[in-house]
Image (tube, rainbow, N blue to C red; front, side, top):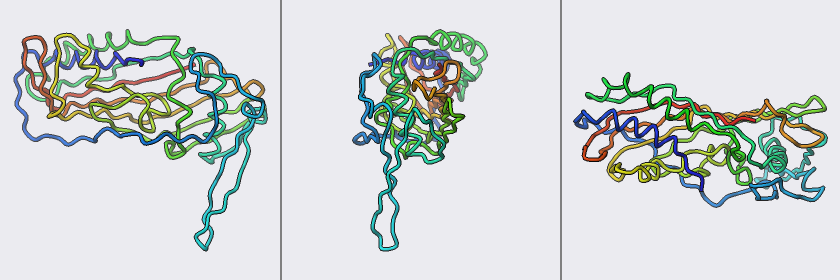
Length: 292
């Protein structure tokens, strides 16, 4: 299981801000609970090997059936099937159809060739004395998070499990040689125990593998998540990929999966070494980008 150590860097910085603070919680802020993923649904039968380019039959590689259900006046369901093909490209604004095309392409590009970039936009220590230390620790946190930018990452998300309802909108346009897909993914907010492939953003792009898990991995650091209020929001998640119709391969320099993550520690008691601290409304904004 891949570990998202960049959240450790952010929490370390936030907790460090509180070393000399002893704030008291006033009014707790209710945050959105972590979304629990139900049984995964797929709209395409695609290979699941994430380490090498999957092998598939010609039919699996080139075509996919997309079922669009339409209700009749009598309340019955009528099904219309439209095939999509990597070779012919796609021109569509139908989310299910674009998703089917994306899954075909993803199966041909499911290798470790992507670049992850992380950029701390802002860090706010929250209320009390903590806030006065932001100017000191924010540059440290920014450098720590930037160091977690890496290359050779796997394809973002878990494309086999993406559902049409995970995408708010999707368009595909083709010039005959390439097809460009643009997707607006439904935003997502997790609690302390979110999982990397849960929720619309997790399935489409990958999210943090649990704030609590990250803190548990830090020596000398503990936090009372059971009684604390923590949320991690994934804002404006978008996908843009350009696909070579003849090969199904992503065109280098044209593919991005990006969102802005907003961790908010509305109220959290923690211990760092011998220091008992309380964080209230501490937050940060980090830009996350996977590119190829």
